[in-house]
Length: 362
Ligand code: SAM
Ligand code: DTB
Ligand code: SF4
Image (cartoon, rainbow, N blue to C red; front, side, top):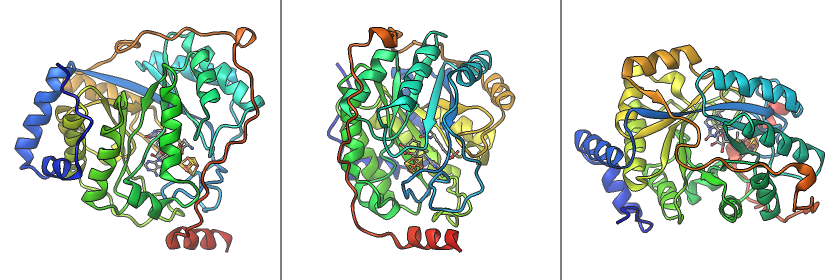
């Protein structure tokens, strides 16, 4: 019988999160062992295929055009560049490439066609392909699926309540609608969030309610620790402690037993011992590569050394689900519809976002 529950309450989740540390760790490790090989960790390489200049006001993000951060923006990479990077990632032991674009949402046209070609190219290298391109319509999700996409990353990022304190240019429901559109295809869902943005424990539990009550639950859930980047509204947030990270990972593992829980942004702040505790508590995936999207990540060789010390093995591609078939562009059964969906533009203002924007204009 499946142990996956879709009716977790905030209080139940808080009770798990606040258990005595050793109890929490033991329970999470027990669930982990029942559902996964504890010595196997899935490795995804991030590739920022279009960097910076984003129209949104996400308070954590260095790629938002309105804040003054020191990142180097780039136009969409070529398919050949992406192929070369994917081959490097494969050699480095990655089973998945996750391509990120600093877009609010996907727009039909040449650039999306180019991304579809990137998906086809990487799938043909027998690697899992993930994209994170912002909001998607059903037709766009279907076109990505047809190209051979394995996963789509779209984070809820926080609780619905705290989301409004961090982002004012789109609503929580838009995120849920995009996840719904991905679910209309056979592409797997990768959705998680960030801790350390000044949210309360109730907000962390609220985010986990939103993720765990999705049915089916996401196949993977990234847990990011905020990377506080100078120039963003959240630049002054204090780093979270390792104990909070382990508690978040363990709680996620317990309530989402089948999900691959990914240690995401923030690993450069963690020791190997800290990461080992996270793996023990049920994390079984990492983002690898010397860079996340714009900020540093541990060196690939350091990660391989850590795997050797801990006796961990990288997961082989398509262990959890068969490889999707790639349909070539000329054989596609879907048209580019040129849709202009009406995603929400809430009109509330976030003081610290406005202040960071004003500072950037000076
Ligand atoms: N633009 C698309 C979107 O927002 O969905 C895709 C790229 S966006 C950079 C992907 C995710 O990166 C965000 O949802 C957020 O969880 C994470 N992220 C961005 N900046 C971060 C930061 N400074 N620290 C931790 N996570 C961050
Ligand atoms: C996710 O949850 N974390 C990754 C990936 N999905 C796209 C991105 C982290 C970005 C950290 C800040 C940066 O490097 O720009
Ligand atoms: Fe844009 Fe995504 Fe960054 Fe928000 S998180 S500013 S949507 S790139």
